[in-house]
Image (cartoon, rainbow, N blue to C red; front, side, top):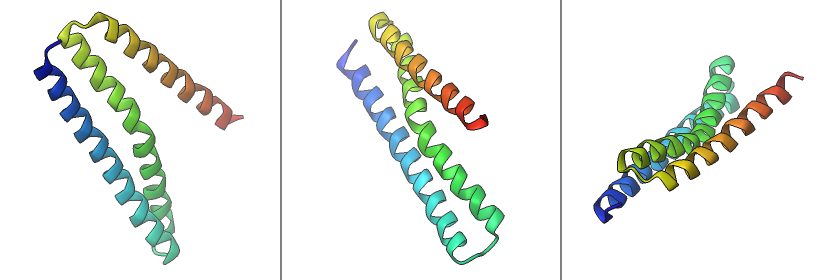
Length: 102
């Protein structure tokens, strides 16, 4: 793994995390303001839910981007480690969704 590849990955991940957090924050702020002002309550709930989903999806996307880059760099130790992390995240989401339906 070259320093240039690592630097490029760090920049990509930084942009992804920043974009995810800013998008989630924007959705949550607009949804909250709409909810407090009682403007289009159904759409306000949609925005609030979308903001939470974006916020929760951001770390998962970070892991996916890392996985693709590690495969591209042929760093198999990090590929296996990232796959394990992705497995834990997916299992957590599945358990949470199952708990929600019960």
